[in-house]
Length: 461
Image 1 (cartoon, rainbow, N blue to C red):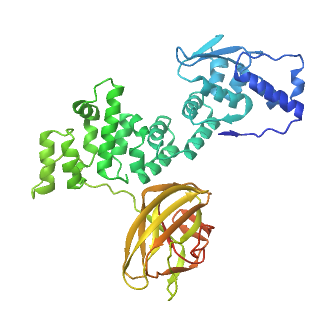
Image 2 (cartoon, rainbow, N blue to C red):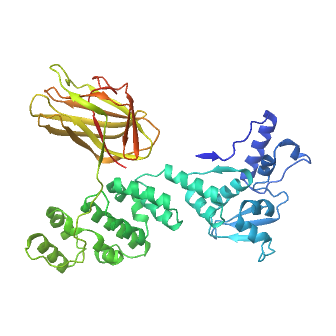
Image 3 (tube, rainbow, N blue to C red):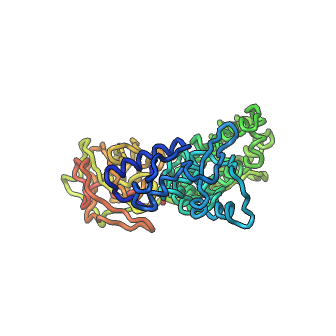
């Protein structure tokens, strides 16, 4: 993924080919420009500066970048670097400037250093998932704020439950509060996915404790416990310890008391935690007494259940009705498209039930983006004959990005007619989130913007 701060003007074919040729040369370093009138090929100072990127011509400083065994020698031009970074300015022209021909930078990876120089020389931002964190580190170290902001924006747009825990750790390290907040939003709403991700095992102890302490974590406590044990096993490997039960408890330290074991279901504790060997015999006995005794012992563990997140509902109809021949289900699909103006997490749908007394339905709910299925679940729900909506949920909340239309679908199997919505709205404001609705070509049972099924979207924001 790449972005340009200042889009380059279109050049004549000959000039464009020359620019491409020189940029290709500059990737491999140690470049020189052949010919005495190369400047005439480039009409703007930006294009002429770009030619000097990673180029030996007129270079008056060199950097040896990367850790021992993985270094790369990069040419630079003091004036250009000083114009782009106050750190380079102080390094080359400040009161304490040192007259060196070569500077070693062992803590920055060569690709990330080159990405920073490319921005300074060319006004181009070229980021990829594998190097963006290292590029952010370089931009922070050399105080290149616009590049740092672009890195943070890149991370925010690629944020998911798979990488949220690692990015949380890094955002705290880089002191990026907006990114930290975005990470918490993902971790809270998709806690079980985040805790089961490989990235969770890579976080530091401080980040682990902040997650285990989180009041709004939307996860079963047994999942939290299993995740903590997985992290402990990885930490044993990092500390070159055998991953025994004793060593796992050792590396967890006091963090284990942040797991709300007494708030688990008794079955989860008895069949899981109590038999894991992680707790001492006294701790196991005391927690059993906590579940069963009238006089409960004092525990070091947090005993109150987490509050989790409160789901919100977007209701898109102003009224509902029923008729003698509607709304009928014969395996056909009811579907609607929606978009939001900020990231949310769809937990499920609210559906109408029977208009002819109590009845049971089987629902296959699905959420898609551009034809790709993001979430699907088959659920039975009981309708009591009222015009209320009845919630059905995906296994995990589905992350929804802003300004893109998604398709919500349901195929209902039930003999009874149901209520249906009327006076549908194309736009609904729910707190700080605006939902927009449009008809879906997948809908074969009559549902649309003005009426039909799927009256509610249940979400976290």
